[in-house]
Length: 430
Image 1: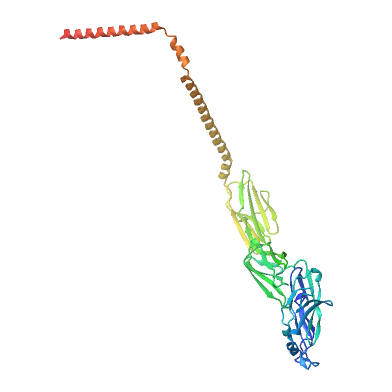
Image 2 (image 1 turned 120 degrees about the vertical axis):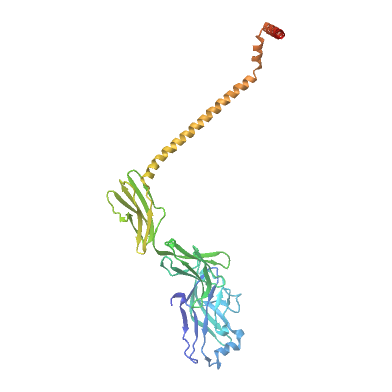
């Protein structure tokens, strides 16, 4: 094993019941975060028998348990004492049971200038012993990057992908919080113990790969909370590679003028696809009357355009095909007929005529409204002009009234005479 995952065996391994020697097991090195705590996994072993006291070391530990003390020393300075912390540099707690030969310890709030080698010392009423060599503790201002596995992802579309992210948890009481970006699915997180007894947090993400995931950056972030408040973050990323057959965009289209037909088609695939055109089932090649142009769209896209000059009549079938190592896709395009082409040119003229008629109608209505308004004003002015009427009546002579009365009197006399003559004539007839 390499680095922090390797175990140090100090002294000799067990060599039988009567051949045991002084030994200690702990990680070779531990990386801690400044302002946080650090867990030091530790286990020791002792010889079977102490001839000076004519007893086993196990019995000596249990005979006077209150005298058993665990210490951590940096160089020749004691920085932690399991029985008394008030007079030492570092606070913490020995979580292991010394009577069971466990010296696992948690040290609190290590400053970054405390990076050094630390070794364990055991003191009892009967004996004292330093265990060498030591564990290297490296204290950083920023947390280590999480580890992503696998480091590279290249899969076929539709394949299930499993990603794992692990981040060291040197302070198990404040493990890092892992998050995925983008969140392709729900993840499963857990705090786990490594082979060297250190702790880490792992997060597993499983999703189905589609072509839209190709080239996407997936990031795992680890957020660490510090003992004195605040937090620190680190991250690791990978790029997804998804292999998929060509996908033709639905935006392909054709247009027509009096001289030519122009069509375009766009496709994406991984590996990058090739494209071809077919008219009535026959493959189109570059010529004077049929010109094909292609434009690369990144690493996975291709746009192709076809121009057919001097076209006459209808084009039966126009097909766009896209191919790569994984398959072929096709799209049939609709070509406007010559009648539709003519209608396209007549349509603006129709719009112009309609607009002119609307303008003429608006002008006519406006003119009529204007004339009606003027006439209404004149009529209103006539009703209010009493002075003019009085002047006209003042010019009529009083003699005209006399003549009117005389004429009426004469007319009444003649009428009465005529009625009398009629009556007389009637009587004579009888």
